[in-house]
Amino acid sequence: MGNLDRRSFFKASLMGTVAAAVATATVAKETFNPLVAQAADIVAPIKETSEFPYTVDEKYQRLPGSKVYYLKVFDPEENKTPIQFVHDDVSATTGKKDTGKDLPRINAETIGIKGRRATVSETGVIFFAQHDGTVLPLRQKEVGWRQLDVALCVAAWSVEFWYNGFTAPGSGPAGIIQHYPINPETNEMAKEPVVFQGMFNWDNTMAEDKRSQGMQWKFNSAEEATKIVKKAARFLGADLVGIAPYDDRWTYGNWCRPKTMPFKLPNGRTVYMPYNLDKYLKNREVEVFGLSTFEADWVKYAGFQPKNVIALAFEMDYESFRTAPSIIESAGPGKIYSNMGEVSFKLATFLRELGYYAVPSGNDTGMSVPIAVQAGLGEAGRNGMLVTQKYGPRVRIAKVYTDLDIIPDKPRSFGVREFCRLCMKCADACPAQAISHEKEARVLQPEDCGTSENPYTSKWHVDAHRCNSFWAYNGGDCGNCIAVCSWNKIGQWNHDIARIATQVPLVQDAARKFDEWFGYNGPVNPEERIESGYVTNMVNDFWSDTEPTK
View (cartoon, one colour):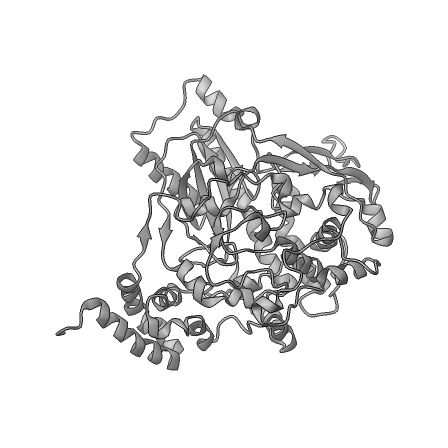
């Protein structure tokens, strides 16, 4: 090759490969997959680090669970003043129309309030009441927001709502559910519910019993224990599994759950709700009842101090995300949140049966993304989510905390942060303009953050108040930032191209365009996604095609 070394050869070869692939996308998926994978490993090799890969300033403090947006909704203090964004108008920064700045006023008007913005509590209750099917979406006449679409969404979320304990908002310790007991002799069901722990269950009695009987299983080594735990996790249903050392920085500063009050349903049953159901249904008035707060004490509530965290990632449905921001998209996370409770409960049961303490956890207890990063499952992207090498950001994360001695994985870098610097597609696609357009991630200061965000770590800012103001208007999750992401594909080869693009100056500016050339994701502009008919078409395709996309 003369003066052309192997790295330069693959960089040069890549240009021809990409050109041919763009011209023949179908053939490319089969023909170029091995070549692109090999080129990616040479040009953009995967790197491991022994320490947490992002800067955490010495001023950093643990985020209180009571400050997590979805829990803060139920704090009566948050119902006294209008919601505030970090930046009232971001158009000067982005150079584009700010499609999110008027959302608080629009949300207030939907519940009959004129002349001010909706509060955090009003914004949250507007969302939750639509999300769980209590009321139909404000957009119910649009394809993707109909009763049909809502029914699928509620079904997808139903196990998380009614059996896991609905820890998706971050509530804990443990998931709490309410069910109606039945008289086994008469088969009559009671009208008053009983409350108990769901599948996110902190009861370690089983582990204690095994230990007291001298039945704790002894592994030959930490290496053996690690291999077996990972095998069990994958067998029980996790798509990805990694192990992180327990790091107190990621545990919430306190744990909390919404307080509830009883309300009578038309069928005579009593249901406990975190907001005044009667007032909301009658005249859309929002009243919330506060939070029960607990010290973040592992020994007190779980009976042990964790040594390690088993991080589990679950792939979300590709087809549902093609419909973003419709309610069908919201069914995608719902199906996985429901599955997360089952799988993490099973894995915790496996450990407890061996005589080890375990706590299954969803969004509760601690911050999932930094734990998953430490466990080697992926990198933190511009949109604040975990971006995995295989599924991109199209995953949700569960955790199982344990005292079992297992070997932590190392954080891995495979080009996500570099790609996010160049792309900004998720920021452009966000209807609320909640995602930063700054090129570089940086250590955020308090003035850079809203009250639901934690400063003093290196990241791109995501305004939770903006994001969830759109969720309230939308009647469900959004998912645009996941749907348009260049790492959100079926097939590894697309992700390898993204890795390579970050390292080749000639194609860096076109990095975000590769997947668009192959026809993925639909329009990036949030208004165009709706107005062009793309979302309607994707929803119709979803319902008409009974075979999943692979």
